Length: 200
Image 1 (cartoon, rainbow, N blue to C red):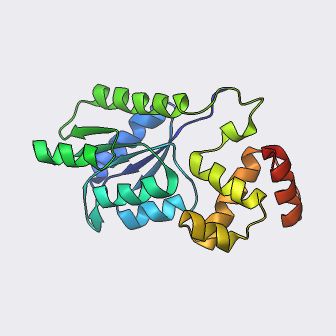
Image 2 (cartoon, rainbow, N blue to C red):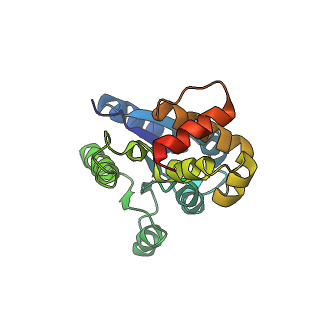
């Protein structure tokens, strides 16, 4: 069974946000919504999405700047969905590392297809031999954290390596343990099991 894909929607227009949420949920996605960059950061403390759909003009900053932060920390592909429709704006979005760029007003069917294409990109970037390679269950950032933890690094040290807070590293490790089905009440025991699973 395919894992349900998680999409982050960052959009300050509530009507557009709600419309896109309903569309993507109908397509089988789990959707995380945020109206500001601050809200998006809070959501990321709980759940890491597979892809992001980002507005650029936001109440508390630029979606371009937030994407740079998002991409560095989590290596997540993104579609910019914005009213900034000038040629230079599109070039800026794609040059910033965005995978796709749509301007408002937009066609709903085209939006769905572009999101689906991004999700296929995520799938193709991951190994398919998940039975033989447990690490294929992890996102790139999660794998990096898992490998550092397997080497015996403390959460604070891992955070310094991957630019995350100590509490964020702890949350990521909990997600990693669930994905790899590692269960042990002892933190050291979990890390030893993690090392075994990753072949460290």
